[in-house]
Length: 252
Image (cartoon, rainbow, N blue to C red):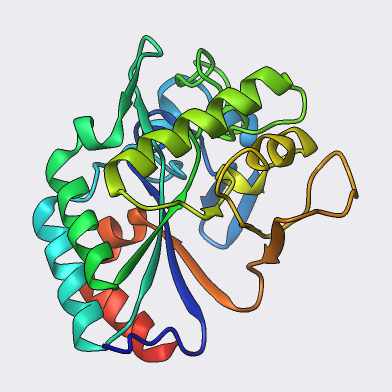
C-alpha cells in the first residue's frame, strides 16, 4: 500500500509525556469586556493558573485505546501517515521514570501495530520532556521552562544519558531503528547533537537550530518544521476530538 504524506506532513507530539500532567502555567491575560491586561505574574499566582479562564496547558489525560483506534480509522480512510513524537518515559511526582510501554501498554501496542501497517512513524520526543526534579507545578510562577529537556546548561552527561536511554526504550519496544528526534519544546543544544551522533538518529526536526552553536551537522540532518509540517499535540485531540483531526487531514 502506498500511504500518502502529500502536502504538509502530519506530526503529533507529547505521546507518553507527563508534561501534559505537570506543566501548569497561566496565559498571562486578564480580559474584561474589550480590555485585555497582560499580567503573567497574576495569572500564575497560586490556584489561579488552574482556572479555565487563565489556564494555558495542563492537566489532561493520555489518549485512550479507543481514541487511538479512531485516529487510525481516519488515517486509513484518507490513506495518510502520521509522525508520532513519543516521550520514552512518564515522570512520576517523585521523579521516577516509567517507560512508555509499561505506563501505557495498550496505547504502545496500538502504535506498534500501526507502525507495522505503515500508518505511523515513531519519533523520539525525549527521555522525559522535562528537567527531572524541577518538573512539578510552582506556587507563584510558571514551570514551563522546566518542561524542555535539552537545555544547553545541562551537562553533556545528561544529554547523552537521555538520548541513549530514550533510544533504547523506543527501539527495544518498536523493534526498529528510531531515526528522528523531535526536541521537546523546540529546544536543543550542541550537546544534544553530540549525543545523537551515537545513535540511529538521522534527522532532527524542529522550528529552530541549536541554541548554543551554529556548527554544521555531520551525518544528521536538521529539518525545519516551519513550512512543510502541520504540528499538533495530543492535547488538540482531547480538546477538539477526532473530527478536528479529520478536518485537518482534509485541509492539508
